[in-house]
Amino acid sequence: YNPFINYLHSTTGITWELKLYHNYDAIINSLCSGEISIAYLGPNVIGIGNEKCNIEPIIVSVNEDGKPFLRSLIFTNNHKIKSLKELKGKSFAFGDKLSTTSNIIPRNILEDNGIKMNMIKPVFFKSHDRIISEVAKNTVTAGATKSSFLKEIKRLNLKVLHVSEDLPNYAFCSSPNIDPYIERKFIKALLKLKPRHDNRDRNIVREWASELRNGFTLPSKNYIQGISKLHEIFTKYND
Image 1: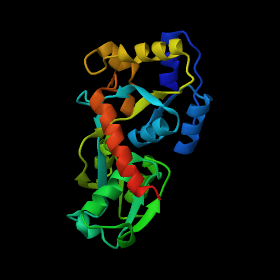
Image 2 (image 1 turned 60 degrees about the horizontal axis):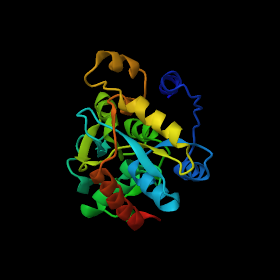
Image 3 (image 1 turned 180 degrees about the vertical axis):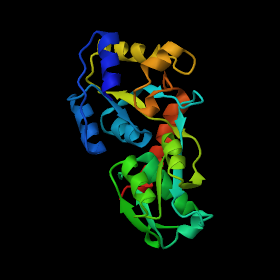
């Protein structure tokens, strides 16, 4: 994320400091307290933060098609497995309890296919990279991640078993205590980038995290409604 921070420095004229956290709860608490001004969050975490202290998405990442969506992928290292139902009795890698694409949505998908948690061997990891790595190493049979990792899954010759419907993409969210001037400068700096169409902008984002390389858009009414729908699903699995 350092090249991204460097871009913010040069474009906004404001000094930015990168802070990394080991779990989503800590990020939400820091946003609510004003310890940090802006954070990059998944859709379910946005819903939780909004409920706790009115955290709001201010600018949303778009995918390779220019849409503010992502999907959850369920994948396996066993190419003989043809359906989700065949995962019964197998080990399955989930992500953080608050993760949309590596926990909440895959649990919902599995349940819709008749597979409850007591029918598989769940294993939990803190990052998407670790989930993919453990499945690739055959430590676990299957796992779930977000669609921005599809190229990596294919590179490792892993098999995608299921792709979810469109979900609200990750977004930058602001603290309720943020200085409005800083928020406006941040939004303007990202919104002007058009890397899908402009070679100069494409070069600027070349070394950014993959999910930040396609550009950004303002959150629409449909995006906010999608966040609310996901939060309802989360409350079902908040154990």
